[in-house]
Image (tube, rainbow, N blue to C red; front, side, top):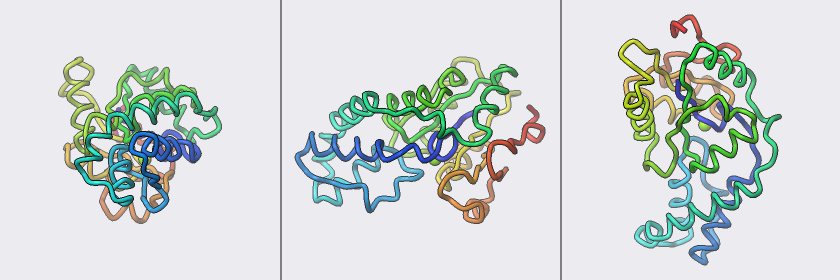
Amino acid sequence: MLFDIDGTLVRRAGPLHREVLEEAARAVTGVAATTANIPTQGMLDGQIITLMLREAGLSLAAIKRALPAIMESAQNSYVERCPDLTKKVCPGARSVLHRLARKQVRAGLVTGNLSRIGWMKMERAGLKQYLQFGAFAELADERRKLVAHALRMARREGWITRHSTVALVGDHENDILAAQANGIPIVSVATGVSPAADLAKLNPDFLIDDLRSFPWQELSL
Ligand SMILES: [Mg+2]
């Protein structure tokens, strides 16, 4: 089972994530860029950094050169400063992960977060123990490619076979599109910023208010 992080497992994790991206972009390029005008939900960190620096006037080539150093710097400051997130865990998230673990179903992350930011969020939310692997922002420039990475990884390790139940759980329209592009079911949760009515327009396989209504039976779990 694959999970998005923001709006799906934790929500309102605070402004720190945006702050470290802005600070790192400034430290590396000398350009003061802001995420204020960027709809960061559902986006990958690399896309957010690229957009804000484009908006600040930097060329794509210059951004590409600076990106690895910005990603490194942003992750360093995030892991140093990440607050306790146990109160930010979405309703039902812990119990879904716990129950999957009891059923020996592997759970992994597919997130636009950079890897050390994503893992740190899970650690501070008290959920890290339930998650065995992940596909993070460094790996691709689009979410559908992250899903493909995660699926490849799980197949290679033998965690999913033809008979396994595979699905993506996410709160954003982009999660639905990424699952559909990879031919796997999507469980859409309305715990992020996207209203359920907007998610419904993309015909997710399952649309639930929050993870307390996880479709165990329908997924044959
Ligand atoms: Mg999300």
